Image (cartoon, rainbow, N blue to C red; front, side, top):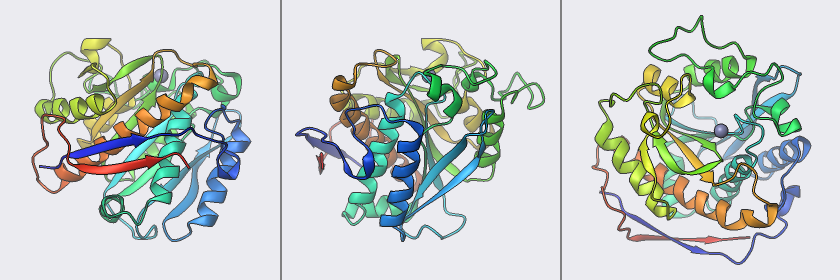
Length: 304
Ligand SMILES: [Zn+2]
């Protein structure tokens, strides 16, 4: 049983290295530069690649973090953000995780995580929407309603190039865990989104989502459909195709809080994502996942 206590020691997130200031919403170029600089600074454990180009031709990049980043066929965890271009806190939360994992890769617990898993972080699924602070892609498609699910075929899905590119990427990746980060409410949601019927992994989903939510001080953790029914979400696609323990993190009550409100949101999200990933690590080692949020290992999250 893995228990983790994450103590958050936060001063404030000052303007960070590489042009990412966690108190400001970054533009596309800033995110691209940050990923490139991170890969340059941590060549052993990171690399940047693209899943392809958006409708309007913007690169959709992701960064891979792992103990030996070139080891093929490792089990993986996929963190995605800004499916919806007006949910920019999600992108910063993803980058905050990159920042933490790279800077603490030698820490025993983080090292164990990076040893076991390859972690892929895709900070902006919808760059065209991001540019306009628009939920939808350039063809007015909601990317996170565009995946196939048990009641809709691939042929009737993937009308957006962005969802199709994510599909190609995840289909080629052995995903044990995934977090789709969103904003507009706060909580942790699990499949199914399309149906109220429970998955076979209901108890596991309940426990990891509860742990993640509680670690963030949030009380909402439930099957996505019971919160609001939707069709075509990434988490349903991943669970349907790979039995990935995929969850949605909703990290902020509003889609785009004022930038000076971001600091506690990003730190809280970081704690939640780490808690989730350590639960996935337990699960992958056939260890039971605690159903309470008592935690015993201590991480100190220093803001730079
Ligand atoms: Zn969203």
